[in-house]
Image (cartoon, rainbow, N blue to C red; front, side, top):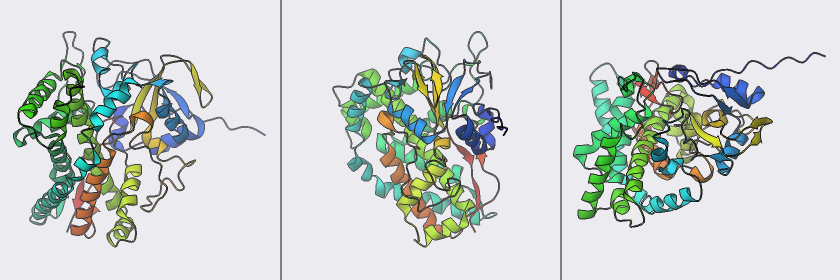
Length: 420
């Protein structure tokens, strides 16, 4: 009896592939035949080639990597697939996202004092009214023209940005800065988001997340903290600015992390969830008629469209994962979107099931680095979906959604819908 050879390892690194959709078919090939697979890291979009990495695609292996910080470090090479400039690495390592226990635990405890569920919940009324107003304006404009609206530019970008600005305590006059910084850092692989690359003296692109490129952001964080010490308010930056245990550099890095991650989690998840509902009218109808609950629906939509596609770790020691030998220093990249469709964990993973429970998706990660703002993100999504369900009887796609060029963020740049 002959044994059919395994299919070749597909490329799931190239960020340009994701502009046409998440490659779920290739993820399935990897899960079934190459659950821990070597991926090349060629020069793409002007960024220099790298040494390659291990792609981890099964749910159990993803969770194992995320929970085992002693073996799979966030600190050694930080958490992005591309290696940072060695000169920037000490600076990048000072961010909570790029630290390992116990240092990570100390910083997480400090920022948790500001990011309390009580404070987040107090923003619910403001966020709901914001969703209502943004949707009303978008629908009025759509119905006065051709009955279509781009929900990204008309609603979800503003919704995520303004909610985060309220939570942080950013003055209204400065709020557009948050979106500009987010686009620069998150959308650096997409020319539409990041703009033309800034080149160094040798003609090579400068990493938009390098200290030199983020100086304006950290200067602003210092100025805002000084203002909050003089004029305290009920917001996250006031709490952080008055925390004697935080160094100035740590506070600036928190501002960076909360601005970028806090904004883009909802900015990516919200239109992805709405696109899923528009493409599944029966699911939308069941949700609108309360045949399924909104809480389980929010988590299923997060499973279906995770805001983050990948995160990197670096092997701190020789180890083995799914039968593959991992050497100290190897890059190990977990694929959240693949884990969320793993047939070994989810029944009918390619079926949108708004009543799915349990739903152990990894859209907010797992282990010590599980998303600190998950409660805030779920709250915003639930409030937005409530308002959409209230005012839109049956949204339908009015054309293809435009996706971000990125192997990191599962972003939508536009989402045209019929709303009549």
